[in-house]
Length: 325
Image 1: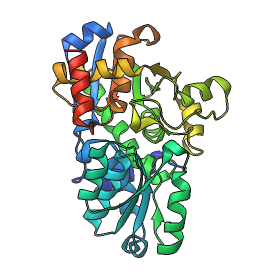
Image 2: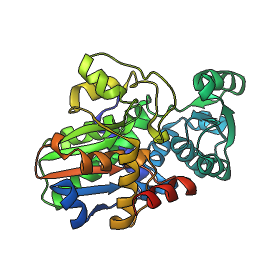
Image 3: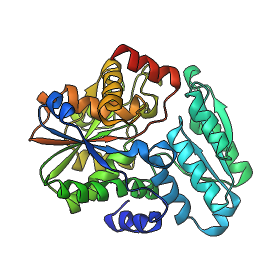
Image 4: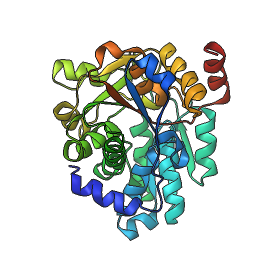
């Protein structure tokens, strides 16, 4: 299991390689949210998302002989790019299994980072695990899971260490920290970091309608799955269910989940561009959408939303800006 010591060790290995992303604010967004709103801009991280942290943490922790043999990951795009970039920097071969319907930008960027991309048909029910398994066996590759991996969680948890420091600089010691949540690697990592560094900050998952498996799992007390693999524009956070490793952390440390619509994600994308001058993908805007449009479910006079990624296709971004210009 991931510990605070592992998160701190990951932070040491990431020093000089990952960016310390800013905590942004705008009085216009404060007015909409009805409280002070701070946005942790992980869309400005290397490869355009927080996933670089976990990819680097996992690659840098590997035994050198295993790393030289190569790694494999499955992802709709952000974990793919994070692992590909980390592997390239470490001189390690990388194979990435991606859904064929992933945004073209993410597929192209992953290839551009030097990874071999293998596509599978998730819309037809093909399993990413099944697609990856024979490659692991035949090539002797090390699998780096997108969220159910202790070192990946530790790398993502370094975001929480930064949030604790930056929130204190802003005088924020109490409040909700909203995190765009798929399998829960980032959400659980931040929760572990804040439990020690800023216990007055409560982590809450933000998910799209129809894919609120974490919120439903919190309500039932057991892992719940989503009915379908696709059906939301928030592709970055469409996962089957909370992870086996992340779920115990989520259930123990996180407040109730928040659910947003695709329309709210688009609106948040437009507002982030207009008011903060940052580019967000739909899944990376879920936490901001929850902060802006579900304030009645949030406590305190300040809220922090983690903007997790900005890898968005041009047409998707233009649609959001046009709709909410």
